[in-house]
Length: 300
Image (tube, rainbow, N blue to C red; front, side, top):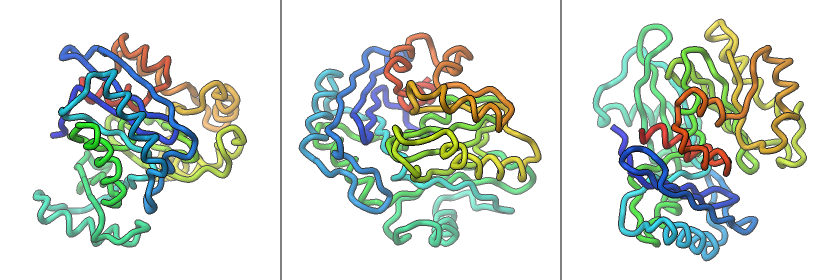
């Protein structure tokens, strides 16, 4: 079972954001501190924290305003740091002691760093046919340790560490297949969720920065996962949810509606209207803090 600290901190390329929840799952406070450009450079392989002093100062200010000290927190880190795979097995061991060697062997050629310096977490989910599907998250230990050390430096203990888009998956819960496409700095994460099952997950570098990204470039990056899903599951996606595009979202929604023949909306408002997140989450929506809103669903 995943721990559920009532405090969550997100460290991204642009900012440090934090939120605290009450026992009733209402938001007590939300704090955002912008980072100087280039302070965090997300990567699965290379050091992420370029300007340690700036990031630590921003994190310290967030914690001070949230009265966070010597407590457990959820730590949300950039998508490129954590690689996610969905794999099918005819049979799979029940114990981690037996399962981890199998996953390390299966995935050692799929990651850009040595498998023996990798942190691995996995979970079972319902398969499409027989057997068992395993969702595995992998990261380079020393990269995750950078973020963990930052938390420790301000008196926090990371009870849970996950990526922004993994947190956001809870926002697209539906019996029908939903494609989530989320831009964060220079990366794009696409995922398809159907009735609580993660059917596919892909994180790529965008061909252009956000202000230079065109709807056609965006569509081309999304298409491979959508095509894989349609070929494998023999059905199209039911809806598309977009995150991280800000005021430019209408530019991209038109083309995607034409190509996918379904509704295309921002990620957060439907989650609020469907009751996935409570009305108190409107503060997170106003600040476009989708990953913290997603974690709020987990916390509730």
